[in-house]
Amino acid sequence: MQSVAIMWLTYRLTNSPVATGTIGFLALIPFLFTTPIAGALADRVSRKKLLMRVQMALFCLAALLASLTWSGHMTVTLLGVFAFCQGILSSVEVTTRHSFFSELVDDKADLPNAIALNSVNINATRLVGPALGGILIAAVGEAACFGLNAVTYLAVVFQLRRITPRVQTYVPSGKSFLADLGEGWQIAYRSPVIWPLVLIVGLVSFTLNPYSILMPAIAVDTFGRGAELHGLFVSAVGVGALIGAVMLARRKNVRGLSRWVLSTASIAAVGAMLFGVAAIYKNLPIATFGMALTGMGLMGTSASVNTIIQTVVMDNQRGRVVSVYSTFFAGSAPLGHLAAGWCAAKIGAPQTYFICGVICAVGALIFLLNLKRLQHHLKLAYIERGIIES
Image 1 (cartoon, helix red, strand yellow):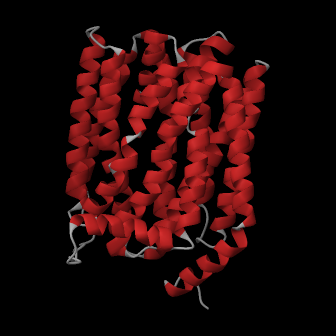
Image 2 (image 1 turned 30 degrees about the vertical axis):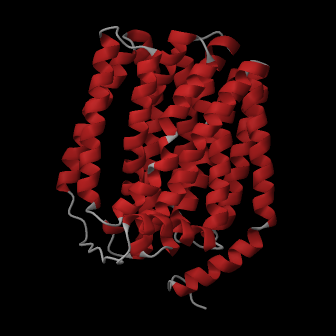
Image 3 (image 1 turned 45 degrees about the vertical axis):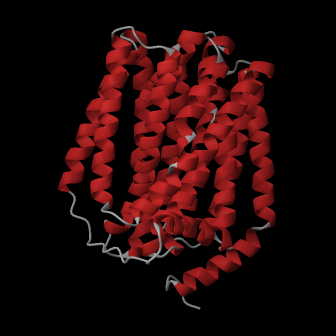
């Protein structure tokens, strides 16, 4: 709800897709420089305690955002500051949460299902949240979304207090914090499995995540509608993502998941191109279906890549390597937001998203050409981890 409300409030104050693109950029650009630090930190301290502190900071931020919006003192500049601060906190939260999964399951074979179930949960909220946000914005304004979001952080802290994770003892490497930070990137770059996976997830995120900053302009300028249509489009992404998450959760193991990455990246590209064409011709049902395909592909690619990486990485390197994944997935999105916002101002939002789909399709094709090599190295990694027999 808060994501929808921030983008809608920005567009309401400016009537500019460049402004929404800038706010989207500010909200996600911290992932490029904070996420690696968060990964190194998550390998050194209690991940549960770190998560709780970040959630409390996010509560304070959302409560202040609601107060200033409700009182009429919110400006685009302040929105940019809030978006940037939330991006810093979110980058720490996402990296820590994903590396925390390994402490919640006793059998490593269950880890892929845990990650998939988390995706089901997250995308179920993406189905309900944007639609409810659009209704609330139209009825009472953006402040209500911010206020409700603040309350949810307290609920998360309450649940975290009830969780007793498996004991994880950090074994000091004898290296400095900066050396540990750089080691995660070295591990990822040298791995014939991890590096191509983070590259494809980064490309998919760069090209397709800008839907969130293009939707306000498309809802208003293309379809002549308001916040409720914006919420419908974003909810369609949630529907597709939820379907993709359930399909992933139903998988019995990680074998064949690299081909699923190819399939979902291709689905996402087709969905984006379909949405772009449908929006140009103002076909609302087809446009909504295109966004659902985009959501399914976007979630499927990110969750599948995350699952494979978490399966092959060592426990004492988990936080740092997962931070590389988070940097590519979330850190590339603000660059896409900025580029898409600028492009939309020049040629139009629907045309921009069609081009995004074409670029994603090219990336999927390159991934296909290198798939056999990836599968070979992935098989060796699974054998080494005892997941499959030689």
